[in-house]
Image (tube, rainbow, N blue to C red; front, side, top):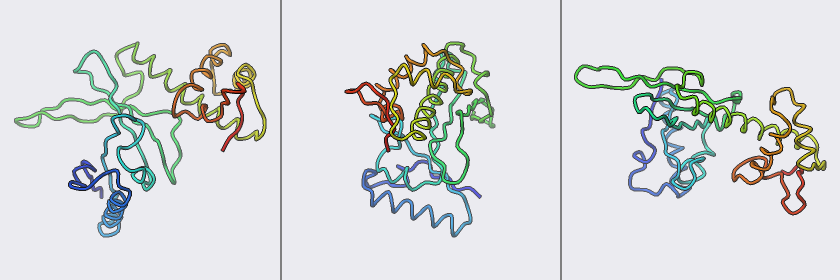
Length: 212
């Protein structure tokens, strides 16, 4: 069984989403659905206007869920070509995804109206070469960002210069990128908000170090 809340904002009409107490009440309602109906609950929520990397409103929305997925539209020049990217941002019990999943939306006739059907897709199905290249680079950067965190976490107290860290990561079998490019990526990630790499970079000493 599946219960869908479409959307969280509509389910919370009249109360503030930013209030943690209100968000917790929604969580309790979801738990009641799970217990009484024996069902999974899918809550559709929007991201914030200023920060599209997290759910709008209280941080409890992301903190209380078992699985957190982020769905974004893949921008293409042809409006008839509709693709979306699905990213796993959190899972309590399941395995994390190495890469995002893609969905293709197909228009179908439903009597006197039209609707959309979600079909599984891959990055190779996206018709625009430029968009594919952009998506491929984003996936590589996300993998690279995670690798930085893992490497430094395994070496507490060890410090690296940008050149030495790029040299070390270039030997990772999962990273098929030239060392020169990795140095540029390190600089980019160090200056990008929300990345794991940024938390490990000391701009004053211009060194990389493990941090909690």
